[in-house]
Structure formats: structure tokens, C-alpha cells
Image 1 (cartoon, rainbow, N blue to C red):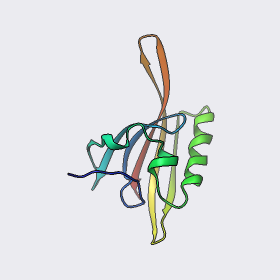
Image 2 (image 1 turned 30 degrees about the vertical axis):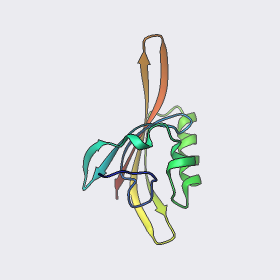
Image 3 (image 1 turned 120 degrees about the horizontal axis):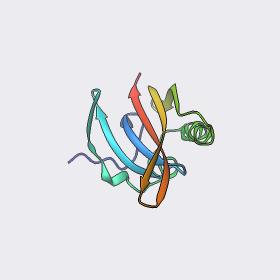
Image 4 (image 1 turned 60 degrees about the horizontal axis):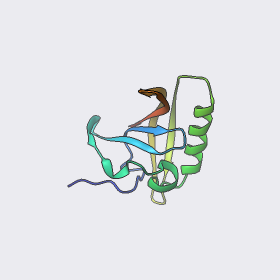
Length: 116
């Protein structure tokens, strides 16, 4: 069984749905460009504080927070995820979405991370 307990530069490719605080609401792992099944063991964990283990996670978190506070609906950029061993280049897309459920509305961010 393929489980992901921590996100490193080598296994973070996929689609994440994060709330504005960075809590993972959904994660679909990507392998060879194809989106695979959801990985529920990351659900409910904070992407930046609990799940991600790459060295420059604070740089990525700052970029995410800036996007959450901006009025732009999307942002696309390249990011170098660093570990002690190497650097993994990725393309990142951030997308604001709003999920409505009966009488409440939740602002979410889709984070799509692909190999560069």
C-alpha cells in the first residue's frame, strides 16, 4: 500500500486542497503526470507545519499566504523545493475556490504541483 506521511521534494507532486490556514482538505497524488487516488492520511494535517519536510517550506508558505490575501484568482510560478540531498524543480499553480455547503461558505486554495 502506498502511503504518504510526509511530503518531501520527491513525493509532493499532486493536487492539494488547502484551507486558508494551510490545512489539507484533499490530496491527490500525481505520478508520471497522471493524477492517482486520494491520500487520506494527509487530510486534516497542516501542509506547512506537519506534512511538508522540504527545507524551504517557509518560503513556500509565505508565497501561499501572500496569495490567500491577494485578490487574484490564480497564480502560476516555478519553485525549487530543496532537501539536503538535492533540489526538485516544480511548476506550481494556485487557484482560489469557494465551497458552499448549505448555510456556510469556505474559501479554499487548490495547489497543483507538477514536475518542471
